[in-house]
Image (cartoon, rainbow, N blue to C red; front, side, top):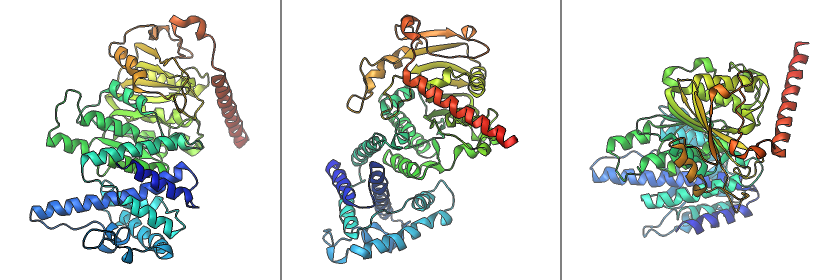
Length: 487
């Protein structure tokens, strides 16, 4: 129903000079979509209040409401072209009046977990890239056709929005950092099995794919049972938590969670790694962590000082953060590049030792090249529980039996065997177990070495070798820079 409308909006954005990529299309669609959602939400609340004989105070003041400036209507409900701003008048209103007004909500909000605060945060980070008021008018009229009144409509919009995020992830440049393949996320969620009442966290939330999939898993139990009003309220307000550093990802995460049924997502716009690990207290810890932290980044010296194991590798700092942020008995599934398992640098060895001693690393899922479209780095998923040391590690080598690409990407069927075998940690041609006593106590090397394919295990992927060389070169340069600073 709404698919053509989304396509038509993209066509309008494609012609707009300020928009040049899928990232721009998603960003600009998001702020308009958010305001249309907010208007539908307010209308629904006002109607409910009227039926109950109560009054309702709109969050957005009259002159800034969607029906006033974006889509004015005549009494018969048809579009009022005579009173609809367009051209320079529309651009000036949006840039000089609407956005500044919406930005001000952050200061006026009672607390960060309110929708008022989210409004202020979003419009403090995003800008309209429209230069033509006529293009903006066309986009707004198309956006007005989207409705959020029923669960069916919201579900359809969430599917379309996820498709936009996927396209953005496949678009090259830095788009891939916003998208983790949903079949992989769903398999991770199925293994972790989050429960109502548990707090779930992603400190590198991106587009909130992990939180959205966990929500869907918990919202619709496999046994067909329905959640109670109390359980729904818990799911809505006290279950999902995230942090995100980048502005565009933050906005997309908020919109994605809203479309999945969370009205005021508990997502904070902040640099997770700027938090000192020693400041994390019991109240800050979570039952479940699901994440795919960015890797390959280089964090500054002052950020590294927040961590006991000093390293410039972003993903390794995040892994320390996640271990510290788990409650005793808490469960985690974290994507990380596979070179983490075997790198010989001091930070990698120390981090593997910490993981094995403070957590039960019970499962390692080895993902094939091409799992992440546009990213040549191979990855693994670490599944661990906090509070008891590792005794045995169960490995599974995912092999879909084909080369994966944009038209042949990972699907749910590819991961079905992994989920089934993992439930009993069963051995097969693709899975095996390693006792912790067999792991070298000096290197703590956790490399994936399938004993059923011994002849292939010795051959490393050329891209993997080049990636490790680049990482070691960068680390050497960092060490040399530190020596120069001391000198």
